[in-house]
Length: 123
Image 1 (cartoon, one colour):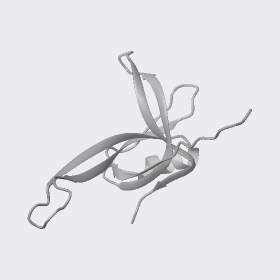
Image 2 (cartoon, one colour):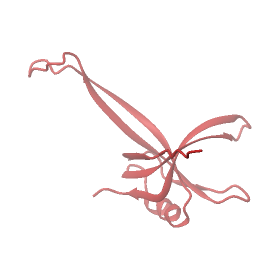
Image 3 (cartoon, helix red, strand yellow):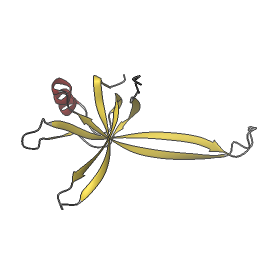
């Protein structure tokens, strides 16, 4: 019998899309939740670019749901992270399910700030 370890680690640098909200379900720990946008840009066209033909620039924005459970970090995040802030987050990906306010079951992919709990506001 051998044990295999795996890594589930995500690093994101992006802009906060909404002010964080704090939620608490009865009997469970509170959580601070906010959205984070990351952008990708790439150039299409010829592989050999000249000054005259730089190709088309394409861009994609991806939205991530960030959940912070750790008590100290959860409270600091709720108090100081604001919409439009550029922040760095380290955590892990979690796949789950929840029931929305209309009693519809939904799938959710969430980044959970990990044991090292990194949320930093770059200068």
